Image 1: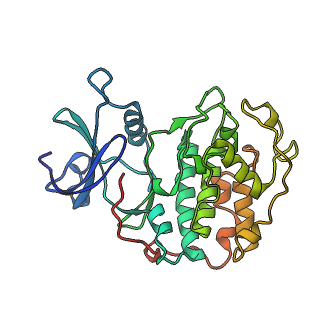
Image 2: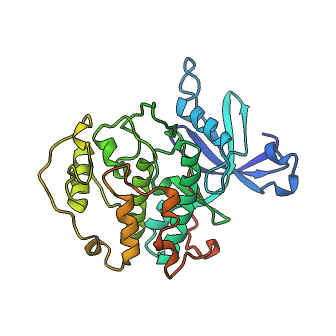
Image 3: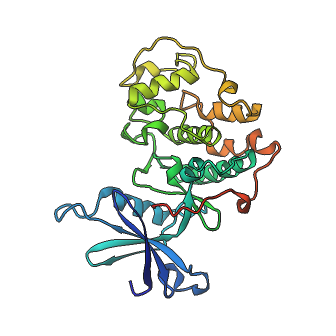
Amino acid sequence: MESFSKTGHLGEGAQGVVAKYKVLGPFGVFLSRPETCPNFVAIKRIRGQDNLHGLPREALREIKILTELSHDNVMQIFDTFAHRGSIHVVLPLMKTDLFAVIQTKSVVLQAQHIKNFMEQMLHGLQYLHASFILHRDMKPSNCLIGYDHILRISDFGLAREFGDDKFLSPQACTLWYRAPELLFGSQHYESGMDMWSLGCIFAELMLRKPLFQGNDELQTLFKICAVLGTPDKSSWPNVHLLPKFKRMSAVPAMKLLTLFPPATAATLDLLEKLLLFDPNARISAADALKHDFFSEEPKACERTELPLVNHLSSI
């Protein structure tokens, strides 16, 4: 801790306490390149569960995954060290998160801003999925934005490797962003579940509120069906084989233009491809980056033109 001086409290979460620290000298990865050392960092002190179980598994999993990844749009770990019986994780100091941007009504989100945020999230997800990592909790508050205006996907406590033989919990992901295959109890899912969550974030950037605000899994399914219609064998083959499948009254899909009246045809097409019921048919991050949404005018703005709020978020 001799390289740091605490300057303020940033937040508190399930795994620990986050504080802002001034950097007094080079540390960790910056010992060999001190000229790149930041002036301030965020340090998360991870709580142990108890004397028998040590550190939370989620924290250990997050540290393991993040130390193996390296991408501009994925949260990085500068250093980890033990101090006074706790593990401390040194992270970049972030300015705000996407949740704060969406919730701050004085912030005007135009098409070029939304395109920039979407591009950054897609680049991060493309890298994660190419590395066979599922984030499993994509939501606005887990998309942090630094003072350099770079969006970094954070909070990897639920992240997992994926593959054909993997059994995964259907309880992953915050409810409003949880894909329908998980709501129906699937234990075999892949990158499509993150893409559904991204579709929910895309809609929220335009609506300035979550699209599917259910109080429980069943109500969330009803809200999804009210917008997208009831899934059937043509829109989602083998849906009836999922563990918690429920037959629901047939409801037609809404015209998305009624929900998003200013949206262009390309905007709605990308949203539809992200929110397809069949996870195998959902657009991938790599293909989404090639979508016409990003090539039509107005193009994505520069990062420095993003409308941000001064809000130090928990990490």
